[in-house]
Length: 128
Image: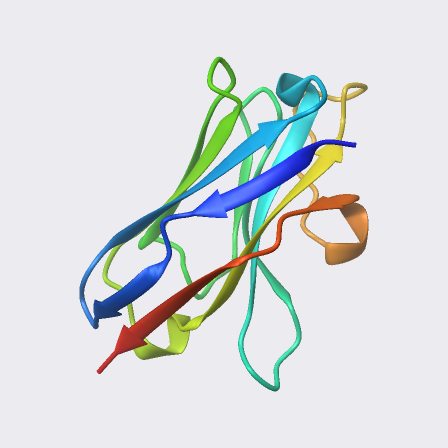
């Protein structure tokens, strides 16, 4: 499995921006599809966005389309989540996740059960 460490969370006002980073180590990062999930208190963990290991395909939850952008730099073993126009309802712990998809460079998983490596999460708080 790959080890994942998130960074970049914090407190921001509504309408502001944050960029989360997830650094991976331990295996061949470029063969892993990556995802960002979030979990707010009392709610289930949900997939915010995901990207294939080739970077060619992405998935976005309807709630973040047009505001969030996922990207990856395979040379740096890092995946990013650019979050713009943040809303109070975006407040949650954000988790990075990975799934070995070396068999399919275009596959984009989007369910929590699809991923087998997880980071510890980073808190994002959006004030109104």
